[in-house]
Image (cartoon, rainbow, N blue to C red; front, top):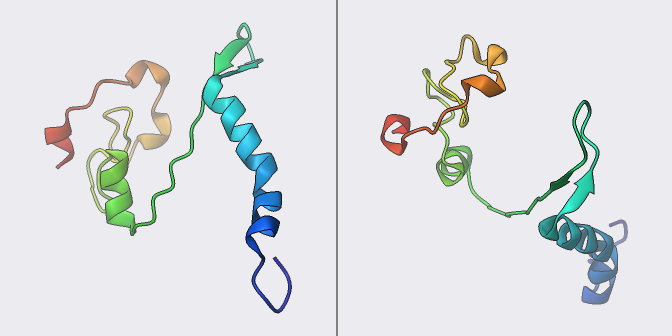
Length: 99
């Protein structure tokens, strides 16, 4: 926010109010049209985590940022063929294999 001083609490609340309303709607579910499919209810949530990259990956449950073998949190694609990851490749990953 421009200006020589930081915004007041009321000004911050006013700026964040539209985003908070949308996030509340998404948490409860919003009916969306998905290309090539029937409209479906989509849910979303926001988690704020203030941490460095290694901690963010651990928090997310994915392999570390320097992990060479399986960086994708949804499939077993390795770093060389991760762009070929498809929905049919998704598997339930075991936490031990991500260590």
